[in-house]
Length: 196
Image (cartoon, rainbow, N blue to C red; front, side, top):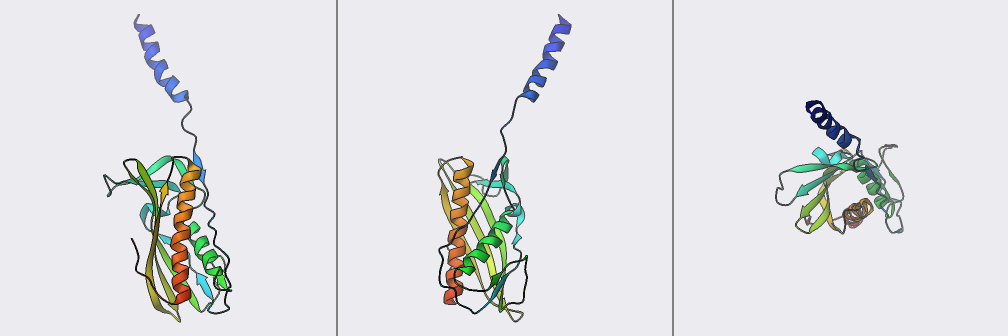
């Protein structure tokens, strides 16, 4: 009787180990901006974006509103590229809707202005019954080696379901909204107060 019991005790964990787990989901962001009428000057170069903490990782980060000091990482949700790289692409694309000459870190040419940004938040904020994509970044414009202005930009978008596509769409909408506010400030020469 004992050998059969031992055999069963060994077989149960082996069955659990062979059971398939949740399949990883990799999410893609493809920010889009409405085309504008770009002006020739000033020219811009966007520096590589630095990321604070887990906001720069490829694993999906989330925060439970009941424990806002704890950032968790999902086991099966991943970004196709680090969120800081997505923000660089969005900044370059957004600025190109208003300015004719904009380069990114892959082609760091001399320009009239340099855009330096730090990604502060790129996470899901979950509360009972609802979740939101949260994107926030700080940005400084530099001209002739001096900071000419700095601002903070952020946006939140509701996440309607747990599906990866829906989550990615919410983050894409939030990044588009925050970058559009930044580009509007650059075009108008003002810095609006951040809503975050």
